[in-house]
Figure 1 (tube, rainbow, N blue to C red):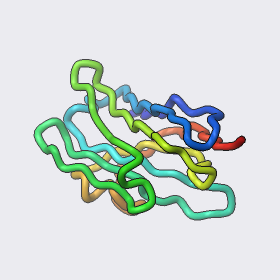
Figure 2 (cartoon, rainbow, N blue to C red):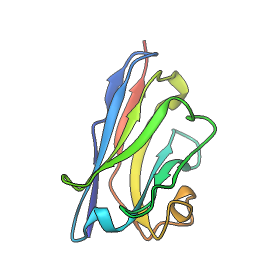
Figure 3 (cartoon, rainbow, N blue to C red):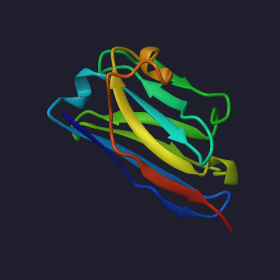
Figure 4 (cartoon, one colour):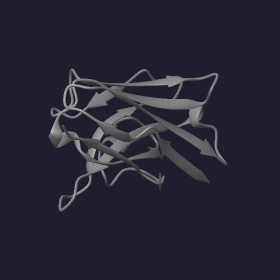
Length: 124
């Protein structure tokens, strides 16, 4: 099983980025997906999560609520994290991970499997 987060980059404060999470070895539609981030010198934290294709539950951390949107494209078997109104404090390596439910993958202890991260740098 391999998960891959992509779409990171350098963006100015107030800008937007869209991250993608894809998988090989499992069907991403059939599983809950969470996005996490880890800033330099800080612990990894949950950002957002979404249930499987039959579960519309979505969860957001307070720090990103109203700015980030998680979604899934069933045809492309991809989960996205649309990040708007980015702030300098959003700078981190972002990871996607999978687990049993949106609630399970909302916290670091919940996921079964983690992917490689993608770096998001918000800077002027």
